[in-house]
Image (tube, rainbow, N blue to C red; front, side, top):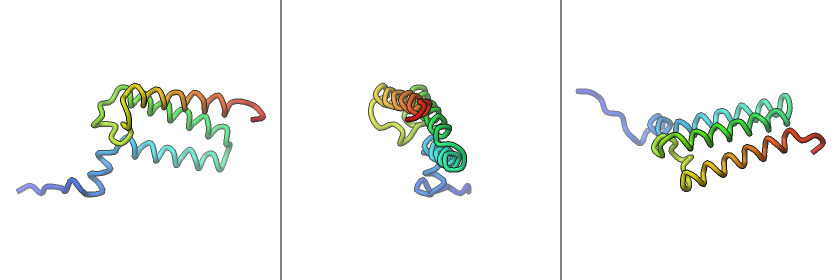
Amino acid sequence: MPQRHSPFSFAAAVRRQAVLTAALCALGGVVVLGAVFSAAAAGLLLAVLLGVLGILRAVLPVRAVGALAVRSRGLDVAVLLVLAISLAVLSSSPNL
């Protein structure tokens, strides 16, 4: 008889929230790179991460993005992309 895995386990939660888990791991890497190298480069990388998350929210179904789906799809995508563009502009501005 095959053994059934509990849907309430940590591994099941990570599988359900794969996009969010990957985003949090990438965010940790960006923070480390910002602390070690350059805050401006970390800002650009964070802008790229937000842009990728916006695109993923636009193309993936709600079940695949998990907790990244907070509001309607259009509003989530708009907020993520506006944040990405704003952060990219601010982090590339000299003497700011």
